[in-house]
Length: 215
Image (tube, rainbow, N blue to C red; front, side, top):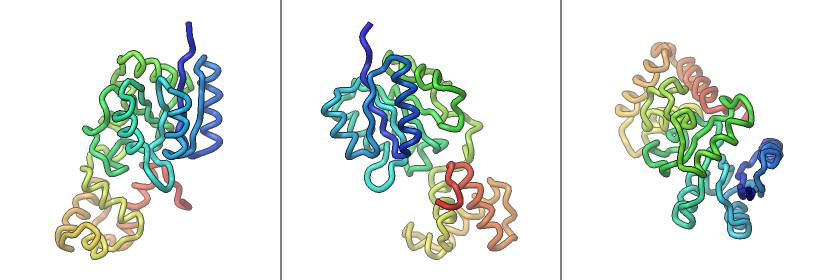
């Protein structure tokens, strides 16, 4: 049986190395990249059968951007997203726009490396199961919020005021206030708590997205 080629695209060096060693132990030939630009070069040289792809890759294109490039360049290559993000909304993407046949695994939910290996085998054989799509799990963090509500919550977490959010989204302050109120209700945050409500909502977003307060 021949080994399959896998490219790991992950900006965290320690995790990149751990995943690489794990997949090499499982019999895959592995190449690594820290961002989308590096990944394109490696992709051309390595001719992979599959890609393990983080979504947050620092400055420049994110994992979804690179996945679109893969789909246009080599649609036969399997894709496993391996990320902290509960689903595509957290990166400004509609979940329905993900390429068909992909697997989506949250780092915090992996029990062991076998889950990643099984997901790779599944995308290579076009046999992905719902268990390999953590982004579709109804109980995922903030799963009841819409993409628009997530986007507004992200801006709250970044310290934007309602007026600044309205300007950024090219809408009215009143419209933003309505979205913010619905977000707070969905999160169980006391709307009348003033600034503390925004802090609490921001903390819930940061926890859900796997982002530490210091980042």
